[in-house]
Amino acid sequence: MKNILITGSTGLLGGRALGIDYQKVSYKQLSESRRTFKDLFGPSNERIMLRAMNLYGHFSNLNVVFDNSKLLQLGMSKPSRFTDYLDRCVLTTRDATIAELMQVDFK
Image 1 (cartoon, helix red, strand yellow):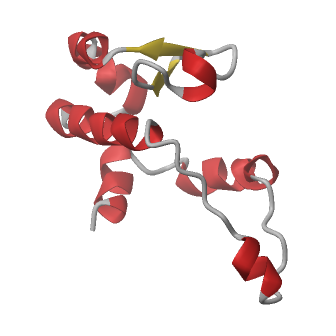
Image 2: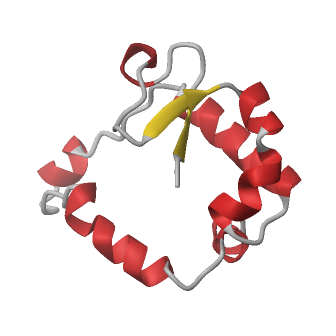
């Protein structure tokens, strides 16, 4: 399965996709591949998936980074790296479809 990284013209790291299994695609390319979404993501609404990926693509181009320095100054512990708990994300969502997960995310 190919993973899709949506970025704009500059995107992450100056336009390079992260990871070997990722490729940078334009919204037009993504739209043209919408018939493959069911194979990639399971049962899903193509139009809603495109919209969500488009929103994420715009968000990822904002180049915004969360600054937790004030939280750390207030005594909160340093957060875990995403890669330290990624396996739990996969395990806890394994039996859910993208559509089900989107219902939670977009409420």
